[in-house]
Amino acid sequence: MARIIPLSEGSFTVDGTKQFVPFDDRNDQLKDRAAGSLLVEIQPFLVITDRDIILLDTGLGFRNADGILQLHQNLIDNGINPMEVTKVLMSHLHKDHSGGVIVTDPVTGDRSLSFPHATYYVSKPELDYAFAHDGKSYQKEDFDLLAQRDNVVFTEGEGTIDGYIHYEWSGGHCPQHQVFLIDDGEDKVFFGGDEAPQNSQMRSRFVAKYDYDGKRASELRQAYLERGITEGWTFLFYHDTKQPTTKFQS
Picture 1 (cartoon, rainbow, N blue to C red):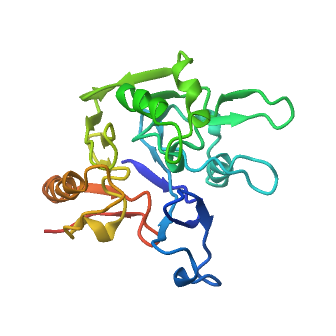
Picture 2: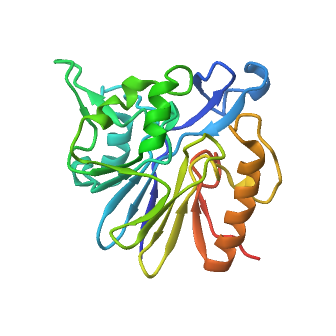
Picture 3: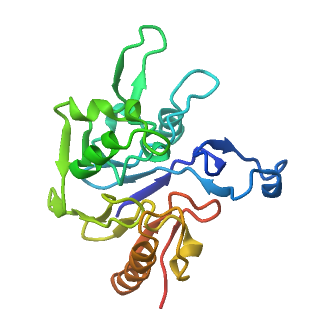
């Protein structure tokens, strides 16, 4: 049976500037933030199967007060050595999902992949698109090493990794977004990245302005929901501030 560990980096608001500002619901009010601000969790996931320790997206790349990559600290706090991660699956390369791909040594300035013993799985069309659109949503210094390392496997379209991790192009939130379904024979764990970011969006027909193709993203959420109910998926919600995982009932 797969073990699922949410690795929350906290709640943030984000507006048109694409800056992620920490939000503490004990002291902060959404109405005090810039117009149009969205409240989101930043929440990579770890899925542990009999064969792998799998990381799904890599957060913002922030460091804690001790200078340690927050994602590494979250793993350590859950009893996982970051060097034990075997696979890193990237839904897309927006900065709130790819900020922890690379770590910079604070003393030497040397840059390396944050999980050197893992194999990274990245959409090649997404990487190409990200390089071509470096700016607000994509910051190439977060992911440029992916094009230079041997432990990176490039995906495209749909396929299967090691016989039990299925990926497919989705293309709603951004043109080359991909989603993952981990099926270890006992559990089916679905990670939709920003195609299925929050529990509350799954049963609505909300068309989001922040999606590249809002109509497609809305239709995908409905399709994933229907498949998930039929096949018993556990959904992982990267941006949900209250409910990181759920199984939907018909």
